[in-house]
Amino acid sequence: MNRSFWLAKAAKFVFFAALFVTVAVFATMSLWNWLMPMIFHLPILNFWQTLGLVVLSRILTGGFGRGGQGGWARGRAWKRQMTQRMEAFSPAEREKFRQQMRSRCAGSWGRPAATEATATAESAV
Image 1 (cartoon, one colour):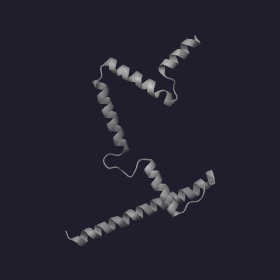
Image 2 (cartoon, helix red, strand yellow; image 1 turned 30 degrees about the vertical axis):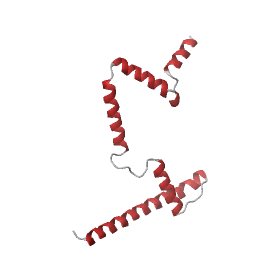
Image 3 (tube, helix red, strand yellow; image 1 turned 180 degrees about the vertical axis):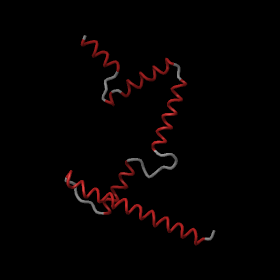
Image 4 (spheres, rainbow, N blue to C red; image 1 turned 180 degrees about the horizontal axis):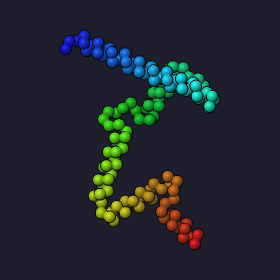
């Protein structure tokens, strides 16, 4: 393969990548300018502001593709790994782990911890 073939291929890739980004930004800008000023009384955005908004949203919601597996695949891999770890526990260790997770996570999810719920139920009786 000669050098001009690879240069043409790279130029085609850059052209289509720029076209894709431009179309995505114009679609986002159109949706924003159609909905947001009417609903939330926000300002109308131009192309460069919308491009900045798209880049910022990509950074805040997961980056620009870190390679490897996508979000769903990472979630499934994590679940599989946790299942394997839980299977290695004895029943007593498993119950102890569950109690620790309930006590650590219950307040952050808006549910009372198991000990608080039983204490509240016992005091009501």
